[in-house]
Length: 432
Image (cartoon, rainbow, N blue to C red):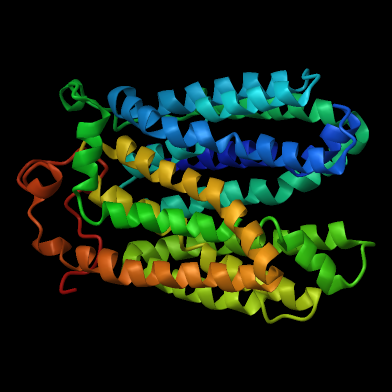
């Protein structure tokens, strides 16, 4: 088996384990606070749940460029191992907390050392033949989505048998196992060379060079808007399901099914749309997915039954399967040579910012205008993102053939590329 294919298979499994582990406890955080940490006031439970969930993203947003810089210096695999071992320890310690404050502190620490998924994306994108990057990133995303789907169900089953505290120990164990298989079975062939390592000058210089490379700022903004639109629904989706159901009994079960429909569709569509990205261009898949996703998001506001909501979520999941894989593949094409991980670090900061702000704005829109308005708002954000992509991203890739290699600091065409990477192979048929 080719090295890049083995890397993809191992990292698919690792992402599945990481996302399943991380999602098996967070949905049940209110139960942990009330049953294990002694909170009884409903308002306190809501406040602490929001703080403990959201605090993970603040340090992650701030340190993502730092981890990207180190990845470009010393390799992406090292960053996966750093994050994996660190998160395994942090989550294991969460099983011993006695107060909400202690859990909040460990979640903050977890956010500081996180980065397993972004580093995996960077490793796959830089160690896969260029003409297969879109397909590989689509397959990789399907592993994370599968874990996200199964995590809550697994957590619910385990919580009834071993308790909520023990879920943290299971999470820590799963993270440790995922990290060990990366340590022993992933081989990073495209390591940064000493000559390509940044010689100093700081974050500002690196960021200025990256942000001066079009259309990277537009791609960062697109990833922010996508994540913002996705998580803005989180405060209302379960309540919206209960409203459509018309009763409290069974609402939690059906809310889980509704959420799972998106994940199943996303898992099915991501590899297919990744191949379309390689064949027809990631910018085309991105715009098409944004327009379709916007239409299906508007459909959420029109449904009158749980069955209709399930259909809308499944259709949206199909469209969403082409969003982040396309963005990541397009970033890989335009990232300055030797600065790929730093470029992904800035992209991840944008994504984390969307994760932070989305639920806050979604909750505010729901409070002011009602739950259906949240879906209209998110659909409008995706539609605006499609307009941004059409205006700023698509033209940059149409002009790709006319752009000199020196724009990205690449070697002249006469220089032989690294073996196995097909750097000179066109991404699309000539004549486009």
